[in-house]
Image 1 (cartoon, rainbow, N blue to C red):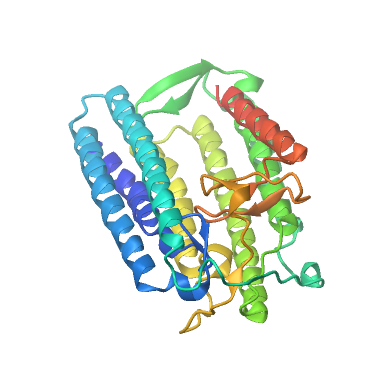
Image 2: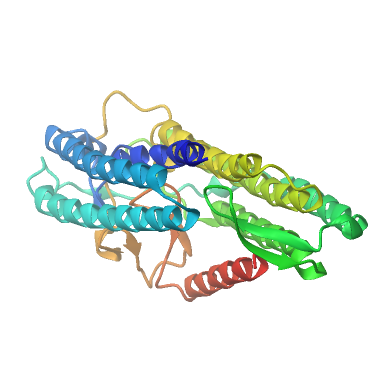
Length: 366
């Protein structure tokens, strides 16, 4: 069982480790470690060396941590030790990634002034007034499939309520052992359905925010930039819908186990395989698409046009704070996807809503 859990951990965390190391290659080619540059400068030799150095250091640090984590997982005597080792690994990995990004952000700020024509180049802003008329996301009607699965799961457990054992296994460790159980009640039986509803609403909101996020067009080649950004949004909209459905199905599987208790190996495999699928899907999409669609139809030579320099609004290269910008959602500079304008009051309302949803999920999960 320990070897199985170690294998599943590899499937889940190895792609994440690789994507973290190569994230500077996935950002827009107008951003280098949170600093605005032209495409031409992004492809210059100094910035190529900087990205290679970052990737090498990140891979080395994460590989060491990952090997130690897998070794601890295999050697663990029980699920508690394994969960503790995993928690420590994730915490150190996140802290190391943040520290490394900050170090290279400040390196990049110092290097920027020495880049060819970087300080003197005229920046250009491009706006497409018809951008919103493009089909930017998949329809929210796709979430009706999620709703149908939730309704069917709820109906099945209610109809078969008397067949459910008096004591229900609620949580398992990475070795498949039950670490939390509860007496049968309508609350415990229906809690996965409540989690499904919360998660579906979150994914639906994410899909809506992809549509409403601020457009970002590179003036060096606006037509190509529009095509890239449109495909970028559509692909991540598809990911949102598919990954949301996968997590809803996982919770339905947990409910099925209440009715017909299964082998712990099957439970462990399915419970980690589905999140691993979501992670692999996200990593594959990141490498194929890039931030803002930067890896779609990539030109052999970069434009010398300098993008609008709004670095002053990006604190530490990754936190957007611009009171003059009415946008709530903007593209990330560090990573793939979107972040919020933390100077917009609605951004804090969104944060509060996410926090409430997380707390609700924890309550429903027992």
